[in-house]
Image (cartoon, rainbow, N blue to C red; front, side):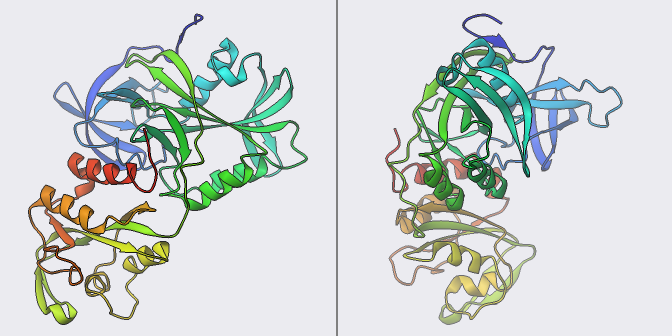
Length: 379
């Protein structure tokens, strides 16, 4: 360790390419022409990162008798390295705090790690110049525009942590450190698109809990070159239950369905993305598309009552339904004519993909591009 950086993990490391994230914690990786399994210690969705062909950094597991012989430690993206092992960010925090590299925590020392408190366990108890702090560390792996966001999946546990950090019995002031890895980010904000409840709690406790965010600049050989504090942004957030959404449906076999006044339509086996909007009740609207039981009202109801939505992506605070449908049609080139577009001039709002579009980098970029402008200005 030196004054400007430190080595997070000793090698040797292997370079590989992602074949698939087969299960939440198991990935198939190609290394030097052979396929291996690697353990991914991260429960997050990592939707925009774990794409086929992604460059991975692997390390042989320390436990020789473990079934999975390799750990996936990082994803080497074109514009930054993402620390894939979420627990490893705690090690970054510990080493950086000790070395005085976290600007808002300079002068603090770690009294205890894994500090229990009532029904919770926080990452660190610190002794700082202005008194003790109870610190929770969170890892952000997604950057939208030039702003990192957390979480990438709804987190009840995360909300519970924020509330507990305001408890008057806490043995110090509550604090949260968000460590951001991956593409360069110039700010941080709670992901109100993905988890508006977490964002509301975040804003409710922001005056009582120290909210800090630092960008971690790390190399593929796991050397932390720099840690830079970035601002936590709240004034760009408007948490309303309105906006645009995309819902994904899987049709496992060729079928023909009656679609209300649209008549009978063919649905070849594959994946379908429906672009819609809700002036109010966005969450309920998306939930409706993921349920079989409903009164058949819109075109999409005839599809979702037979094949409920399997995944959704929301863009809060922005009415861009037609623009999103247009962008998705340009990627796919195939759609169901007239579906969901009776009140506009679009050819269709239901776009067909032969394979799961979540594994398509262009699909991911389109959705992220709309979210980056979704009711906020980012960078």
